[in-house]
Length: 278
Ligand SMILES: [Zn+2]
Ligand SMILES: [Zn+2]
Image (tube, rainbow, N blue to C red):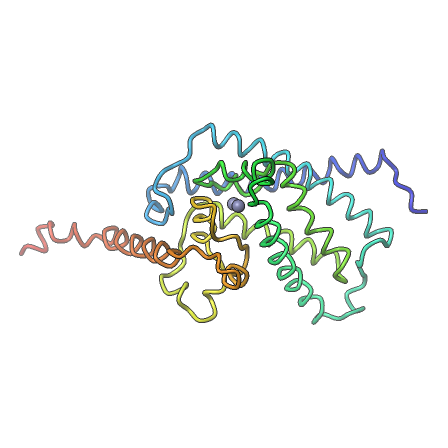
């Protein structure tokens, strides 16, 4: 019987939401402590924007992330129930389609999400919708790890919508959906932590330039009119929505890092030591 037992599902929702909340705040908390407090001086040259956010911004990010995580807990609970009762394209065991498909389905999910994100994101930048849906995420022009899930709840529902697109259209093993959800979060954290460590040649490499970087999304937070993509640069390139100064910004940060490294290596200090003078 496909009955929906409210008591049991409520318990599962609390459990799923609590897990997501703990995982998210532990990871973002560590990133914040390391990059914004503990090692701030050591990584300063890699900071994309050289200013730091105020407490008011962080409090708002924490609040809206918390709401989003409760919504994500709801989606996880519902999807697990839908999977269990055969309403989605979930399958078991892995042998049914083999290991090749098991891994391919992960990349398929990434591609579907990339397209879903670009187009829903473009839609949310349409003036009428933007004010009520996406403006909140753009309040945070200088993102922190906590910006990753800081959405207006309507945008939160749109962002979570990709999970339903995936489970209803792609034959999947549930562990792959979990891996996909985790990977999407990692990329999101990289995009919002506000630092760039990739080498200067990355954006000129024939293949790697198609992978978006932290600078790419950070520029979107600084300038709303460009850089709408997520994992890959395909859609921004096809639709000509890449920030024209993307490479320039990216390379400037790489140069700043190199200069800071020269200084850290003590070349300046060496000139002044008695040993170097004799
Ligand atoms: Zn946007
Ligand atoms: Zn963002």
